[in-house]
Length: 305
Image (cartoon, rainbow, N blue to C red):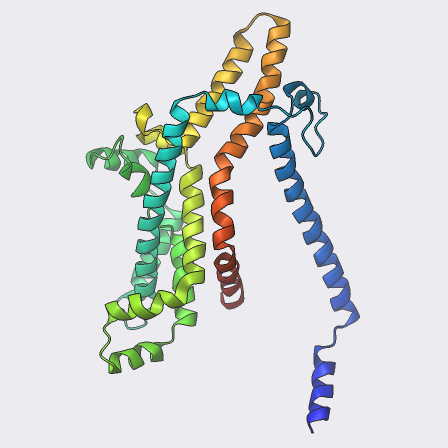
């Protein structure tokens, strides 16, 4: 019986010709996509370390040409750059912590079937994904709450992303059974203790996914800082990088000497790639530590909706 069962099971999982063709096409496309992203990353780093003339003339294909640190010297000579780095790290850490806590607690509450008015609350929250008051009303609210020129103007207005809330709620609904809470209550566990002692330890993948989404959004955000932050000492890194790029473009446009204008254009070319590397390094450092949980969280969402 066992041999027959194994034989029938082998036939059941045997791939058809169509499955094989699909796998070949799928792996080929994914491999090409991965190689294209990898090439862009390598080229950007190589261009930032290459001679400006080599980058401007298109001689950089994959590896650095005439290795130089000229682009990084130009960028890091800006004294306020380190202030921007520190500000961005603070905004990212504090904002990610607040957003993750609010999202997880809100998502867990909405995942409980015994929550009064759960469907109404979910509908009101989903409504905000499609309709908003706009930038001007939001600015007036931030100003009335005296949050202008403060970190809270960048952290609190967009503290909860509805898409992340739905992802977390779906995770809790599919992976935290109601029977687990009933069993915990029998042992004298209340809802608060159940959430911190049982739910959170079982939710590391989704916590990593949500935290990474929020961290990336806060790190790359410059538009809100442009609106709400007027003091240079409170600028995030992205605004300082924008200033450096604009100043290099302005210097190149204002000079009258053709040779000098060409040299500045060459320098501006490697400054662009240098700014990309400088602005991306922190996230590239963080991601490997969260990769295991991130992949698990994404797969859970794709398999269970």
